[in-house]
Amino acid sequence: FNSIKQVFVTNSSIILTLVFFVACLGISEVTITSFNQQQNNKSWQAADIKAKEIIALLNLKLSEIYKVNILNTYIVTLNGKVQPAEIEAFLASLYKESRYISTVSIAPNNKITYLYPLAGNEKTLGLHYKDNLAQWPVLEHAIQEHTASLAGPLQFLGFHLPSACFFK
Image 1 (cartoon, helix red, strand yellow):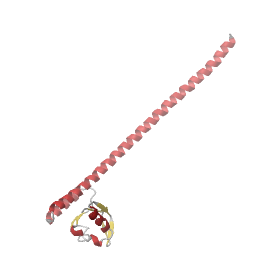
Image 2 (tube, rainbow, N blue to C red):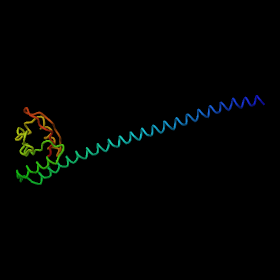
Image 3 (tube, rainbow, N blue to C red):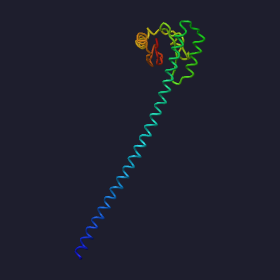
Image 4 (cartoon, one colour):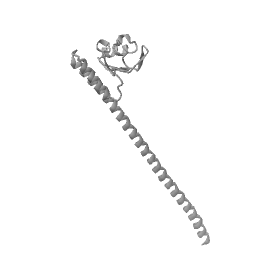
């Protein structure tokens, strides 16, 4: 009877040790899984916030493109009957309502004729794009392809030219 009792005590301590070990493994697994899930949730939340920031910025920039398209449409509807005071008021309004447009100009026959703001850009007024080797290829491509194109910012004749968005 003593030998059976001793085998039972020895085996039960082994069994208890194994049960304790398995319980510790289970608790560790649950803890690690929970931690990883929290980290994944934090990563997804951070990615979601970043995606929303990018979407907001894209919406702002797309609204700027929309404003430039309005200018293009406005010019086309004038059909050559340009009233300088109206154009200048339109350019001023477009400029003031925009966050990313630094200069707005209109260049009939590839010569900058209307410009806003004029202050600081006086040297640009009257510029013939064909004489501007840095921007002319982009403008020429826009004319040929009937698309909008972007060029700049550039240095020209010792002064800074902003980026230009060209339309046919």
